[in-house]
Image (tube, rainbow, N blue to C red; front, top):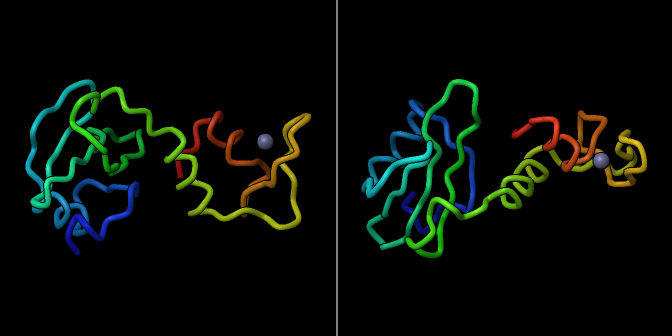
Amino acid sequence: MGASDWPEISYFEEGTDAANSILSQLELLEEGDWLRLYRAADGTYWRIDAWDKYQTQFLVRLSARDGWKEFDATQLQKDLLKKTRGESSSNVCRWADCSNAALCDSEFCVDHLWDAGHRR
Ligand SMILES: [Zn+2]
């Protein structure tokens, strides 16, 4: 699978075969602020969070190199969390005054899980 097959955002697990396969196809351009910027052979830019035992890492496609550190992937990350867990068809978030659907295997919606620190 080359970069053209990678989704706009996905979870990245440093040290796994999948992660090593991805890294072997990327050229590291810059790093800083707990982020790393890469370029794939097809010219696309990708950002990966620096490895930290307590943080979830993401592989995110960027539309440009400019502003690569500032790019806010929060919405993409939330969408990924929602897509990965799935939304309950019957349960509503238990947060007061929230009427969003709860995610599967959870009592809360994606926004409230996110605010509580859940990333996957
Ligand atoms: Zn909620």
